[in-house]
Amino acid sequence: MRCELSAEQIQSYRDNGYVVLHDFLDADELEVWRRCVGEAVAQRGKRKLMDGSMMEEDNYYARVFAQRINLWNDHAGMRRLMLDERLGKMAADLAGVDGIRIWHDQALIKPPWGNPTGWHLDNPYWSFYSRDAISIWVALDDVTPDNGCLYFIPGSHKSATFDNVGIGSNIGDLFDTYPQWGKLEAASASMKAGACSFHNALLAHGAGANMTPYARRAMTCAYMPDGSTFNGQRNILSQEQVDRYTIGEVIDDDAQAPLIYHRSKDFARFSG
Image (cartoon, rainbow, N blue to C red; front, side):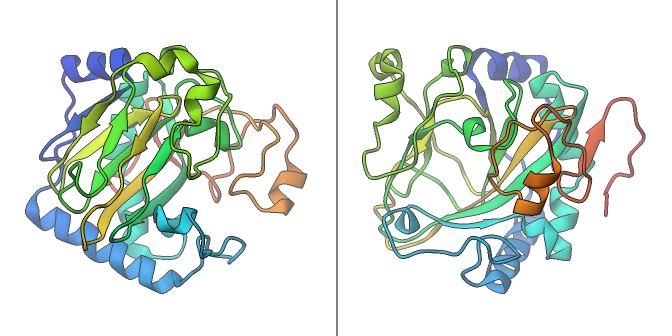
């Protein structure tokens, strides 16, 4: 895994809200990621979450991508991959924070002839608000404009609020909320399998339709800066967890949101 970041890459991320890292995984590592993701997704069946509280539905959204969340919870190989300290350090260095927790991982598999992913922001969906939240997106297949590569509105994270829209059939709904972004040029992010991108969780982004007869596989993880607090939204939390937290309380439950890197703490190279 190529996990060293240059000063130029860090600055580009902070200026534009995203950075693409080519040759992130070597060929052997890519096969491990593909195998683990494939096993974990197959093991889940139609359950998005391990407890079955979110099930795959047959609707427009289901044809945007198959989504399987927190695979680190119930697959040992995914746990080793997702709780890797090196990923946490990369996220912390890009975001400029001291500590990184996993909010949730998710496999995103756009099916053959799959629908486009409408423009949206990530962080407003989650149970905490942070301008420093960040996500990694790892390409498990070659990703192009033909099969649903990511698109970003560079710099939009700087003016974003926590207003958002759902991912629906009108892919430009976000620009009703942020009309100034609708006048900007989008940047596409084609990647070879094994490359990755990081993007700020307030950066406007989407993905094109899959215009091929082959699935487009990606593995992602949303990261929460250590010290983030509960905002009252359930998102992936159980009702029991929501009832336990009070608004403004720090989310520091390692069983729910494991701390995978902190500058002031010693970590094994691989956690779990």
